[in-house]
Image 1 (tube, helix red, strand yellow):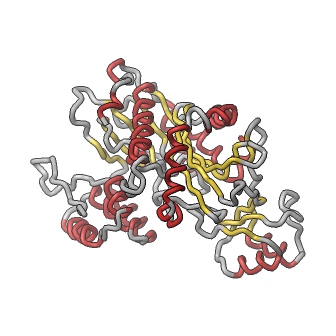
Image 2: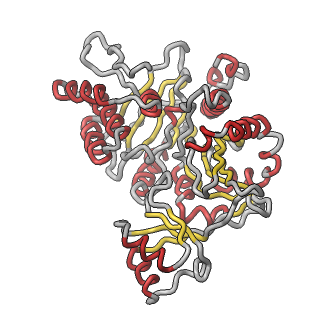
Image 3: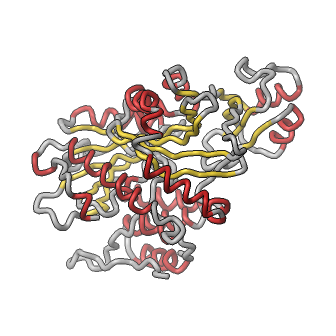
Length: 424
């Protein structure tokens, strides 16, 4: 197993300067089960000797991979106090590389679109500028040909997205995933955007305080109409991801027990929709829309309603992997065609150039959307021996993402190369 190495510095005048490793290699190492402890120690030793924001940024990522979120965010803030501008990629082979400016929010791995995974093999220059509610001292943006807003929608990022909106107001270049559209993906606002669209099924999500949930348990407060007398429903803490704290509630006793075991101050609640297939299994898909075109990222098949990917069932059952491979091969002609109107509505109503969503097929044939977000992880880091069909599919998605950036750039040398995908 290859371990992550600290690359040599390209700066001859400052040989101590850390060359960023970045999200994609570190995520790949963590996914493969590598212990990043030694790398973290090397980075920590480096930042004790040098004021190097790039090393701090990588150290923050390593700490996140090791589930030390509080320490990771503290280290990230140290880096951002030194600079908010990072050049994460210097393009090497093109004489005049496409310059992509990425606008991010401070936070954990879910705070921003992880586009480093999509652009890992792209020959583009990537500059990242972190924004927060504070105005930048220097209002001039780094040189760029296209801007991509990576900051995702959340309560914490609302002010950041407002600041980004102000920052990009003077640029003459194309801005992808404009901030006002990103905010449409909040769990309790996504339904207002997509819930009534033809071909789409969504459970209306409501937001309740801990006090309101407690009053509902005691009978002092009726649940909102969308939840009343409609057990089961699902509940999750505000701001949670990847199924953390997500449960199906079947009665008031279960709701009271859930509340006792949670420290969250606010929750999202929504009716549970049974999306099991005729064979009793649950099939969940992750799809991304790139410039209005849908791409499937994975398909999870499970006996349980809460489907994570990858997981033991997909690894244990070859027939489920075969079904996923077949679904990917036929996606454009079958799934995408069946849900053509719904997929078009997702792109048009959100107004987003790039967005992902987890979904299933409802029993009535509609596209059942569970969650929509710009920060969903898309990667090819699963075991290639078990999932050989995933690498070419994810590379196809990555190519489409890069070509979207090139189409958005003003100069002719950045226009899409229809044969470039063959070089992967």
